[in-house]
Length: 109
Ligand SMILES: C[S@@+](CC[C@H](N)C(=O)[O-])C[C@H]1O[C@@H](n2cnc3c(N)ncnc32)[C@H](O)[C@@H]1O
Image (cartoon, rainbow, N blue to C red; front, side):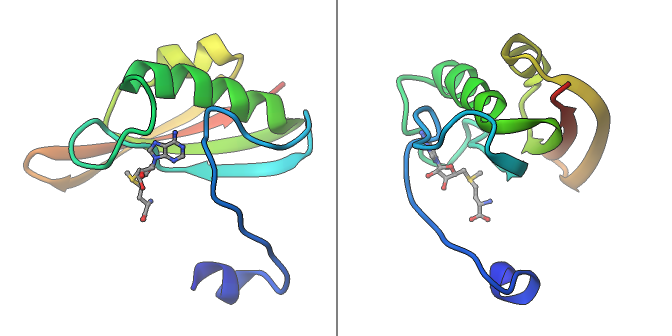
């Protein structure tokens, strides 16, 4: 519904975020909400595996000078820095008593 509302033309594919079938540096922007390790299915060996490999893939496919926005409950700063990103901005969003989301704006130099 969001795509319909905001983009005149789009395509979708379903796949593993740890092995994205795109060439290097072809993506203009990334917005992602990976599993927090609470209830959503983790399609990887572990949450650490998913974060390490998916952030590496995001860095690989993103164009230089562009941004990725990540929503997570987990402190993923170490994973995103290891992937090569600069953490440009951090926001906290209190959802309810036991869930505060972190919203990170990442920059690929
Ligand atoms: C926190 S939920 C995101 C929900 C989404 N923002 C929405 O509003 O429907 C995390 C999602 O990541 C998916 N996921 C888990 N492992 C994945 C992987 N290796 N590759 C791609 N997606 C994966 C889960 O199935 C789940 O749908």
